[in-house]
Length: 79
Image (cartoon, rainbow, N blue to C red; front, top):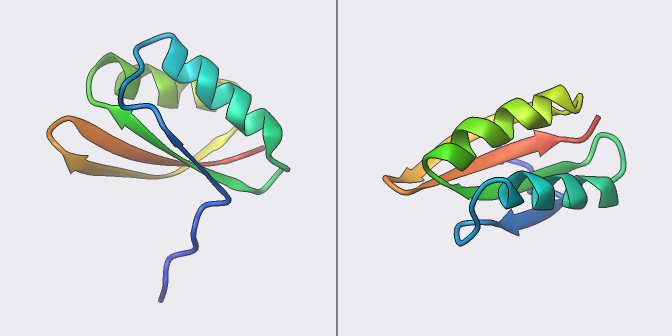
């Protein structure tokens, strides 16, 4: 089965906390409930804090993929 493409994408590899969450939250605000956002995050603090903060906002983490040692992709469904 082919994977559905995210409704929006955000590359935050060059950002640091707390801006990774701030920019993720701002992008999610542009989406309609049920739409998905794929966020590329650097490993480390951003990858630890963004998923927690997104869940606290009521959104759902659909998928987490490790791209390489320094990068993760997070797919979020807007609540």
